Amino acid sequence: MAVREVLKMGDPRLLSPAHPVTAFDTPELHALLGDMHDTMRALNGAGLAAPQIGVGLQVVIFGVNGNPRYPEVEPVPFTVLINPVLAPLAGAMEEGWEGCLSVPGMRGLVPRHTALRYQGFDASGEAIDRSVRGFHARVVQHEVDHLQGILYPMRIRDMRNFGFTETLFPGQDLSDD
Ligand code: NI
Image (tube, rainbow, N blue to C red; front, side, top):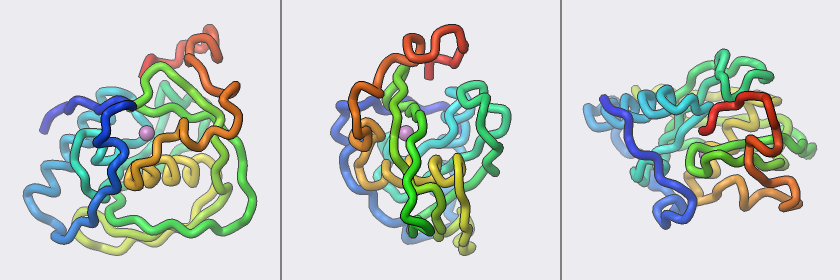
């Protein structure tokens, strides 16, 4: 397993829709997940999508537990989510600050559905079906957007709410992504 280079905004590979995984529990899939896990942990990310390391497959991982980049949020269980499908549970949208390992050093205020159901598969091909809200719902929407070639700055409604982390949140010692 290895920490991989994370592609940055401007790389066209971040804009391509990802393909579904067709074979589960394979050495290749486990190797990909190992690299994603190592990369996310090394960079203190809340989540990572396979296209961010240049792999065009519908694979995301996420999880937050005492993450120094997100000190204020409720824990989200570590999850491997493959071939995800999202369904909003309420019409309500809520603005919240997001960052992304592919947009280092920046934060933006992004509208997301407050509650949603997500379905997909784990690494073994076992079905996942969860209904979540709050930061958990936000993280899932952010990561699954990567599989559609969407980066969070594309979702910002008012670009005045987009800027450098150290300027927006001085003295909070949020790590530099
Ligand atoms: Ni991201």
